[in-house]
Amino acid sequence: MSKEKIQICEDLYDIMPPEYQDMVENATYGKEGRGWKDIGESKELIEQHSLCAGCPEAIAFRYVLASLPNPENTVMVGSTGCTSLVFPHVAVHNIHSLFGNQNAVASGLARALKVRFPDVQKDVVVLAGDGATVDIGLDMTMQSWFRGEKFTTICFDNELYANTGGQESGLMQKGFVAKMAPVGKLFDKVRLPEIAREAGCHYVACLTVSKPQRVEKALRNAIFVAREFGPTYIQLYTPCILEIGKQSMEGLDEMKSAETVGGRFVFKEYMTDAVKDFLADLEAKEKAQKKTAKKPVTA
Image 1 (cartoon, one colour):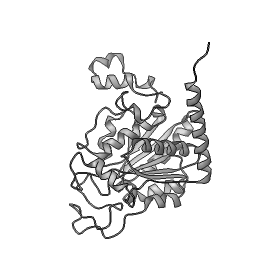
Image 2 (cartoon, rainbow, N blue to C red):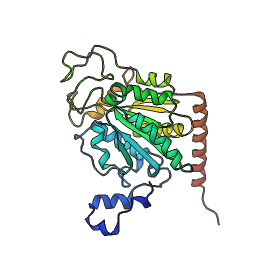
Image 3 (cartoon, rainbow, N blue to C red):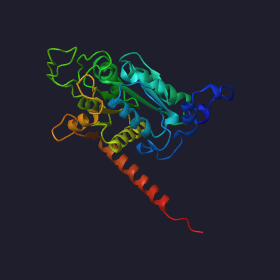
Image 4 (cartoon, one colour):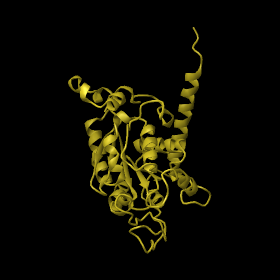
């Protein structure tokens, strides 16, 4: 997708919502160096959403979309869950898969795009909840990693099934009691970042979305590495404030608490040695470009 391809047909322009008109005219498509700092200054790739007030997933969506390095050539693959309520409002090509098979769909999509557009870099990004990623879809998630598919998988970790009433998921904390898990979870939280590493992911990051700059860096790293090396994985803690008994303004505090020393979501990052060298070189080039851009123009 390019900015030209999303232009509104002249005959339909006057009946399109003004918010959509504004997004098409002023979104950050094609902007070099776009990122989370554009939020609130430039038109976002998400105009609105139907999630609960204060939902951390809404924050995460905004940071993820703002951080995509090439949204006009990105296709996102979602799955059934709270995230599927947002994708209809997103100005990026996306596919809604069946519950759990998002990585299988993304595998075929990434290969087809490579054949159809051999000279254009197309990014495929999977975004799904913990139920779709680690429970119902674990086999398809891991098989895509085993095959070395070149796309990024993002898990919005609610630590339960938020969309269907609060059942336990593999990523729920041991002993946590939810509305539809009254006896409490009996086993430990599945260590999916470690599984991703062992299953062949070249870059893995686990974090909350309380720090937008950190989310941006992790996502861009994951996408750039996926282009060159193979599968990458990001696990973002996005607690369901309704199911854990928090108020609408307490989601940020919950995430900050989870990332303190000894918390479940202390920032951790894994990458292969080859990826370390690749990202270091990429960072050096970006710094050189910024330094050149700051130099005064002489006559």
